[in-house]
Image (cartoon, rainbow, N blue to C red; front, side, top):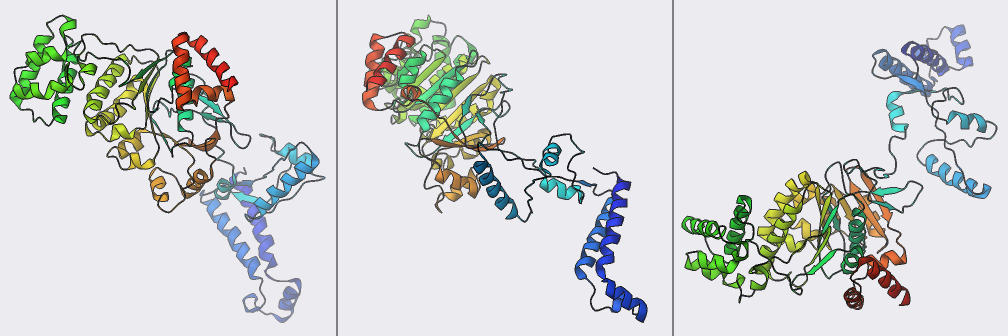
Length: 531
């Protein structure tokens, strides 16, 4: 960078040099002999005049401190495993740069000077003398680069979640966190790699100290992985799992939650609860809280509440009712571990049961959060968005969960599941990390506007449309964007991608024999090698 006085001095000399080229030597001699004025000459060099005016403009801008001036040397160093490879790369690079309107020079005698001049901090070798202003310089400097992801997760004070494979020499480190926000969305067509990515995210997250994973699954795609990590797999609707939602109502906060939970049940049973009925519900809970914990059941609440309409609405939820096996227990059999999976396939279409079921499980999860790193994965999240009562809870959760160091990962087969939901704006704002699966239809006219609403431009949409099925993923966040691969080996895939029915049955069979996670994993990998 030149000082102001140096820059003005050099530009004045440059101006005089260019301005003098407006007339040829013959024109000057002729003008001296004939006395013809310069402005009457019909053959002034207009190009020289224009360039001189440009220099004069730069002088004015420099004098006014609008720009600074300096020398700029751009050097590209090309390497390769052979001379032929280097020459091929040089040819491609030269054509690319020349097509942009720049001129490239392949160094020969000056190659040593050029190399030395490319070393950061060396301002002596290979200085190019044409003056350049700082505005033009800002357009030429390589101020952007390929998104490589954070090499260190500052929020968790730990290494990145996943190291991935990419094209080019810059690696990509996949993280779900942007500062302290880890809410993420994973969207794309079925059969394009969603379950594999979710499984790898969940298993990789377990490396963080005291971390927890809560996985709401569909079609049991995480069963094998859950057995392998020693987690709990609850097949809701099939397993003998029962809950006691009113167990801890002696605690004021739990009694308030139970009150709201019962109101939700009454709402979906089309009961318009009056103020008097609300008072009766609270009184019944208050009385029940004074009894031993094993008596705090839905049946005893049913007996205690003095209202016929409320009693009729609660019949399906007590013993003998369609949902009584879930909610009317005198003992809660839901035990939590660091890795907890809830298979939703059997209860997903039970419109009345799914709301109180999920509300209770989410309450248990919320109570378990202690500030340790946690992720909640909602696979096929449309089941949550489709429920107006639960959708309202998700909106609240997204706002407060990050305060407890918990992140929610939404996954769905179609962008429309989120786009058509009333939660779209909330999810879009909260999920600063988004991953898009390959979609060959992404560049179709009816899909482009949908992807654009997720913040993608046409170039990014085209990348998604050309990405390889079950291999590539497109990352998008405020940190940047990148196409990446997981590059998983067969043994890893056998743990996180075994979702077909025969493998599910084999996993259950092995689990009955090998209760220890390490023993199960060893036998499962042996089974995988034999098929």
